[in-house]
Amino acid sequence: MKSVRSLMLVSLLLAVALPALAGSDAAKTAKSPEEMAKTALAKWKETLKLTDEQSPKFEAAMMASYQKMADAKTAAAGDKAKLKASMTDIFKERDAAIEQILTPEQMTTYRAKMVEMSKKGQEHMKKAAATPSK
Image (cartoon, rainbow, N blue to C red):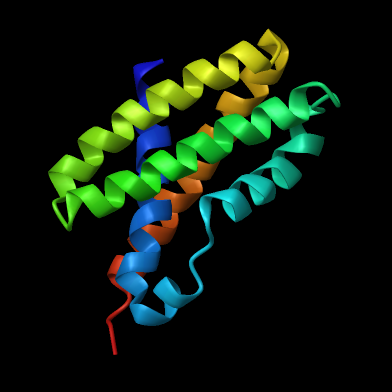
């Protein structure tokens, strides 16, 4: 379980850090927490087979999480250790909130997909680090 959360944290940090590392163009196109929650719902709805009752609750949990992430990023002001600590707490809160919404089977699927995405994110970061910058 600890490794799943660690992998989720890495995924989140990648999601937050990549736009910042990409420069000002990424900042101009950054999505709001509401937009990110809608995108997440669209992505997860079919994968998790969310019911009509679960969908708005899932979207609300994601939106609250994304808002907290945006606030944490602002509050950290470039302090990576502070951001990492905040993100760990935010992930724990989101995981607990989502666990109240999803069935045990859906939660298993969610965690498996998060691990998969984390691995892909780590591979992407390794490739990016290996590629010389222009």
